[in-house]
Length: 136
Image 1 (tube, rainbow, N blue to C red):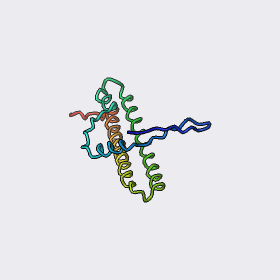
Image 2: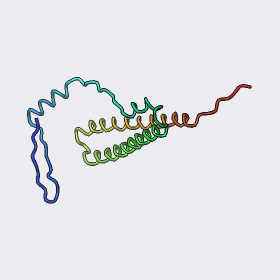
Image 3: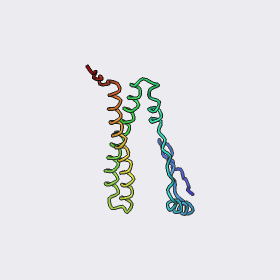
């Protein structure tokens, strides 16, 4: 379905260039028209949080902080990539489709950042609970 050729470069690693064959194009057309399969969501973070009472609260907070930082970095990468694509491929007939897929990643990462912020607030309350008022 694809071919590969190797380009030799002096002082650099070899570069592999892939090309789609005519059979590959036919298979791609069939796959593009096929119904979309439902994705099974999996999240190691959510599994760890589900069992969160079994570790110190600070470790769960650190997991979420790292997850948030990863998605914040992705948001920066999406913004840079969008600028680059628009600059280098202005007027390309596929541009709007490329930007749609980029937008999906941006919205998804922003949702994860928002969820992390909300979750960190919940865990902060757990770490510093408000004293219950006693009746007199």
